Length: 99
Image 1: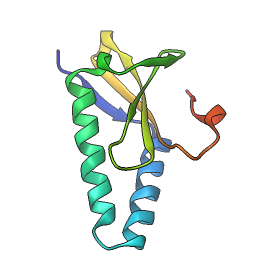
Image 2: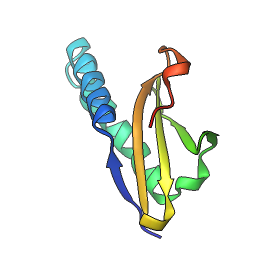
Image 3: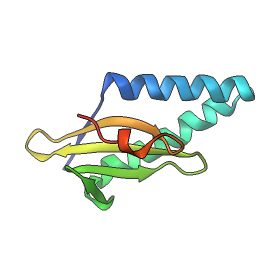
C-alpha cells in the first residue's frame, strides 16, 4: 500500500528552523540533517506501522544521528501519513503530542 506524506505546517517550521540552525553551525550540516530526515520519512512511508504507537495513535520514529523524533499519525482509509512534529528531544515531552 502506498501512503501519501503530509506535513503539518508546524512540523514544516520545526524542520526549517532545525535545518537553518544546523547550517549556521557548519555549512553543509543542515543538508546532512535534511538528507537523514528525508531517509527516515521514506522509511516511515514504506512501513508506517513498524514504529511504536505511543499515545492517542501518535507514532514516533527516531532520526538517526540527530536528537529529533518524527511524530506522525496514520490514516489508512486515506492512505495518508500525517507528520505532526519534528520534535527536538530536549523539549518538554508534555508538548510532544498535538493534533
